[in-house]
Image (cartoon, rainbow, N blue to C red; front, side, top):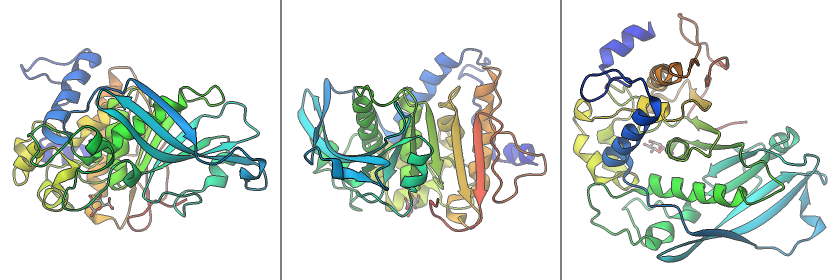
Length: 348
Ligand code: GTR
C-alpha cells in the first residue's frame, strides 16, 4: 500500500545521482543532499563558534535539588564566541543524581521553564537521562513578521531583505541547539556523546534539521513536525509549502518561497532530510487527528528514508504491509515510528 502511494508522489530519488548513476557511497551523497537542503530550504549555516562556555545563573546550593532530592537542576547562561563577538542565551539542565554519566535528551521547548507540562522531567530523569531544555525564543525570536533584530540573528547580522540562500529561523534555532551540545560535550559528568535532540511541531522541524546537520547528535526525535519537517511535501494533503511560506517565510531561506505552488520542481523533499540521520537512529511520531501535519506523509517519508539505511545493511522503519495501528510503537528498525490517538501535541 505504501509503495503504491510513494509511486504516486513521484519523489526525487534518494539513491540516484544527478547524472543518473546509482548512489553507492552514502557519505558523498549525504554531502550533496545537505547542500541542497541548505540551498533550497533552510539556508546556509555559519561555521561553529570559536569558544562556548556557561555561567551558572544561580549560586550552587543543595536546595536546587528537585523531585525529592533525586535531581539537580542547573540554570545556565550559555555564551558562544565567533568573529562577530559573544552571543548568550539561557537553558536549564536537570541531572539525575543516581546516574554517574547520564546520556541526554535535549528538548527544544516552547516555554522556558521546568517543569513543562509537555515534558515528563521526573520520568525522564528516573529512567537515567539528563534533560537539557532550551526555549527556542531565548535563542532568537519567532515574531511573525520576520524580525532578525535579536539573539542569534542579530549576532550574525542577518537582515531583511535576506539573500536567497541566507538562513532562516529554523536554521538559527538548530544552530543554537548545537551550541548547547558543544557545552554538554565539555562536561565530564554527562555522556553527551549520547545526546538526542527532540522537538514538537516547528521545533520538530528544527530538531530534524539540527540532527541532520550535526552528526554529533546520536539520535533525532521529531513529533508532529509535518510540512518542512518529516512530512513529504509533494501532494501533501495538509499544510503545503505555499501555506507555510505565507505565514512563516522567515523560518526558511528565501529560495524556498519560489516553490510555493510548485513542489514538484523543488530539487529536494523531506525524505532526504530524514535520510541525513543515517545510519544513526531516528524517531518520528504523528498524531491521528493532526491532518495539518499529514501523518501519512510523515510515515511515507520514513519509509523512503530507509533506503539510506539499507546502504549500511540496516532497516529504516519496519511496519506491517497493512499499515500502522494507532498507539502502537514500531521500533524494530533504525527509524522508529508511532501515531498516537489525538490532536497536534507533544504528550508524556
Ligand atoms: C503551525 C504551522 C506548522 C507547525 C505549527 C507549530 O501554524 O503551520 O507547520 O509548525 O505551527 O509549530 O506550532
